[in-house]
Length: 152
Image 1 (spheres, helix red, strand yellow):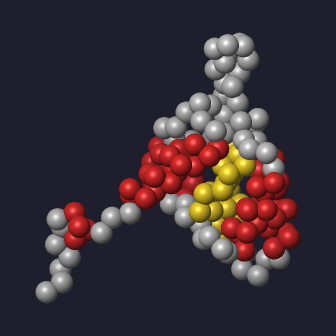
Image 2 (cartoon, helix red, strand yellow):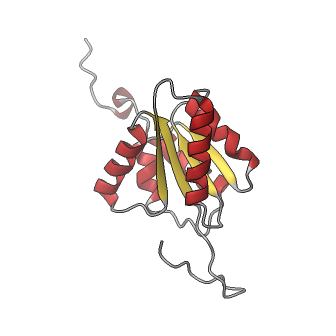
């Protein structure tokens, strides 16, 4: 992790928000790798792949370990794929920890945006709102953009 800039008032470094990406299968690692191929390294981003049939308590323990590893004192934003799923429920179980927020529906544009965010000036909820809005804006239908669909 790079050193944080000092807080203007106290001279102490301001910790950044850590990020944990939790998905079905290896999607999380693939998304992070794809984003890093495009924008470079994403420091303090931890991936947690989950397996089909993996017990919920095992996933919860692995997510808890990842949250602890990613937390540098600025809180943690967990990005997961499918609201209501077992991996997502394991993420929700982390909400009892101070400074944890969960964002459902992770996509590549969110991770690319993450590379340009100052995670020291945002709290987990603010970072989540920014990434959510980026993800929503990235979902497009070509026919709404003036591109022909090929339908006749």
